[in-house]
Image: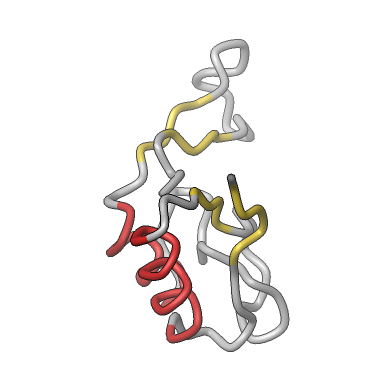
Length: 91
């Protein structure tokens, strides 16, 4: 079982801390939402910058799941607008 789009839009991580703890205890996997630099007060944004700097919400997710690793897409490596992918972010 997997929970997709786990997040909250209040720039904190109180809800996801409780949810991830419960899911970890019950063998449920989850994916953080979203890898976007939107205002975390309006949208569940994990990051403030595409270099991976986390929002407060993102810090809560990262604290539970471990630090995220970033890799540039292999076909655009070195390109200034190279999209990044998250590696190992599933709980």
